[in-house]
Length: 328
Image (tube, rainbow, N blue to C red; front, side):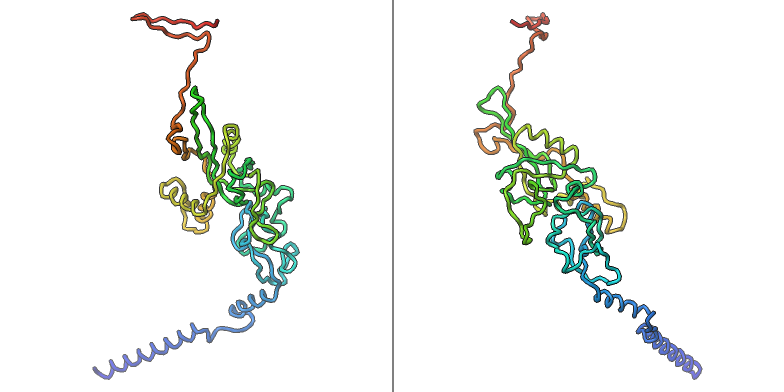
């Protein structure tokens, strides 16, 4: 290698080393300003300002209109003094236990302070109307100890509704006894007049009740109203995992439509809406014959009695004539 090429190579190496050192110095922030107006100083000042403020009640998750407040719906968080409003719930001046069972009147985003005007407590005017979703109705169903899961149904749970009836034909000694599921995945709004599942100490309060108020669509409200004239209604409590499994099956079968976007928040909202909607259709049923071999599995026969004055066709050989049935 001649001297000229060696000198060029050495010069290039020196320039590369100098560029590497300059880049390292820039990324390490050694030359960045550190005055009060710098981004580093501003980012450090915000947490310090927040820690100096009082504890404010904020939402831990998005709370749409109609959400029933639970224990994990909010938490206390430091807040800047200059941003405190009189409508906020402050630690030491507000009891979070008293807010459980309240209903969200105005939508609250995650991390947003909960204001007094955004909630409606049980017993206040408009409470039940605020708990209902858009287009939904409230219907009350009479139940007893056996048909209400022995009092272990609480506001906020989801249930299926069953109707048990007896269908009699000409054979009155052996009617058809059948129980069928008429609607599924209904949200419980209240048991009797209680809208909170907790007692004063924050523990689940198991009570016997005679009425359950459910959130339904107008069509389902009609079905439940007529079913009360047909037989006895029963409620079955749904597991939390059931809704997830039904949703996965509906997505796999193409029965639900998800938003065509890459927005995870929009997809989550769509999934929540789909999972919480009531199901109206024809579901499973069980007859007395499924339980006992001495019971019926099918409808009993019914004898058709012609009405007086009706015309019937009578065949005598090859001749056919119409005969009017007359009364005595």
